[in-house]
Amino acid sequence: MPTGVHLLNARGLLFDAAERVLWREGVSGLTSRAVTTEAGVAKGVVHRHFADFDAFLAELVLDRVALLDGPMTALRQAAGTGIVAGNLVDALSALFSPLAVAVPALVITRDGLRARLRGAGAARFPMIAEGSVTITAYLAAEQALGRIAETADVPTLSHTLIGATHLLFTDRESGPPGAEALHKVVVGVLQGWQLLHEQ
Image (cartoon, rainbow, N blue to C red; front, side):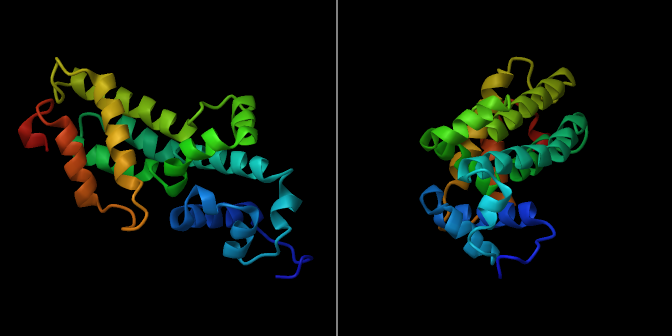
């Protein structure tokens, strides 16, 4: 695309392209050139809209965190309705985008990104942190309603769900896991802590 062509939604186009690159190539393949090539735009577009590549990545992360508001609100509101495991599968599927899977490695390896996220008041791994807080709150609500065992350690259950799901989504070669595979993980983690007929 010629450099002078105006892009109606450059940010969205570039953000979506970055997630596709992350899924296909991983953190090591995520470069400014790879993003613009994937988006089909001139190579200077990233730097016309962002101060540098770390600024682009920080805005990408914060944008995707904002997109989690809907699914995370839906999970909080689902307490006492539907099936516990099913509610969690829906929320975890929304949470673990290619970016969420890659954020820990990006934050660890890119000082500039880490500094920008810290400057924005974001958690070190903001998407996973947001998911963990919401899942903990949801499980606590289900526990109060008697759908999770009274003796369950809710924060540990939440962290285990996040960790197990993260591992499931890190396998780029086979593509994103299906709902059945994720459901199996969720039920396995909750086994013994929720009513059997709720699974």
